[in-house]
Length: 194
Image: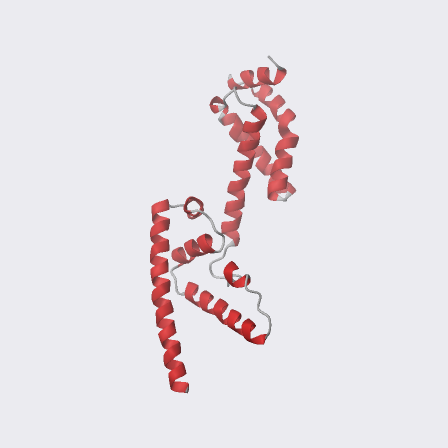
């Protein structure tokens, strides 16, 4: 039995000093992974600390048939992913204008006319989004701009997947109704101008 396994066995029995030796052995790879994922040394330090706390509190779920390093790095990675999702949700202000939808950006507008059309499309999308209730708008943006899964959106918005599906369904229906009304309004305006 190697030294690491002895430390793990002792730590599983509640020996904090043994777990301290595990921390010493893995602090560099855990920190490096957190830093590569988060790109911030302060956040990486906090993430590493949290990963070790989670590992310690979940030692009973560790399967000794697998490498401890893989298990430890998995905990670290999952925690960092959660932080990134939360960061993304915090940075996402539903009151700020969004960048153009990726499908609009992929069309490289050259010349003044295509640029005007693209700009009008972006303004229309922003106007339509502003008409939605905040929880619908957030769900739409997370799904279609940031391409999060239903599970990720539910976690970010602290609700259920079925609630997210319902919000997205209602938002799409409302967007369609608003879009149709806006289209009819534009047609009426152009008919009176001509």
